[in-house]
Image 1 (cartoon, rainbow, N blue to C red):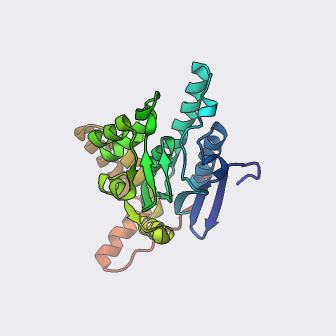
Image 2: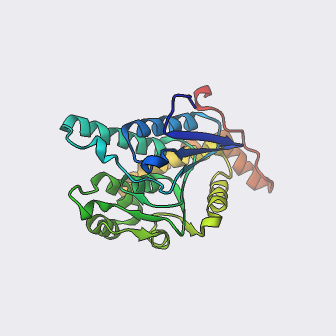
Image 3: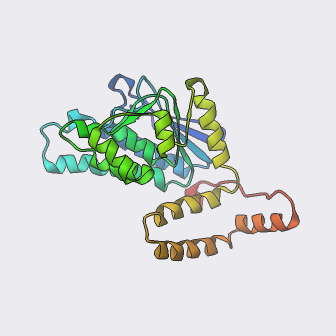
Length: 265
């Protein structure tokens, strides 16, 4: 990662990249600069030959959401730009081919909750809480609800949005906002194990499948099947797919090609 980055850390261990929100003194607020850095960190991870990404945070909060200091007394163009950068960041997380696991150790509020909902998978400690607090104030959490509503459904999303109340990690798990709630001492191990399971098999197949999932999930069923059929038919001809089919027939373990950097393809 470039040395100029101030608010994000990116670390690689073997095939996994961990991207850290690293502005603990400001509770990891999603300032314009932090969001631009986070977007670039995910783009870089997506271009790498890593097989999986963990999104984590330093400090006592996961993220306090949008930086209201950057929204006060601004004109419409400036605020639209701020939310546009946020949207690009969220879409980038879902556009990279690798599985992304959010590892949540504490409060994720507003845009921070949106980050968790945007990640492909999420694990949280029992100490973590989640909220979209706009319902208690004067600015409804409209953009966080795009991701949160797609994770937990309308009634529960609107309960979070309209009341502004926080939910604990066990509730977040039962509602589908996260995959797993664990004791704090088990958070790192549990998120690593989930990522390891999610990165088994062919990396190229996983990338095709992730992209197709997000493309079809909001289509009507007929269009989704048409699209998915085309994708799966084309994917079945790839070397990794043919190796998987052949290995199954021959009753042996498949041997997939290593993931290559995207720019080398």
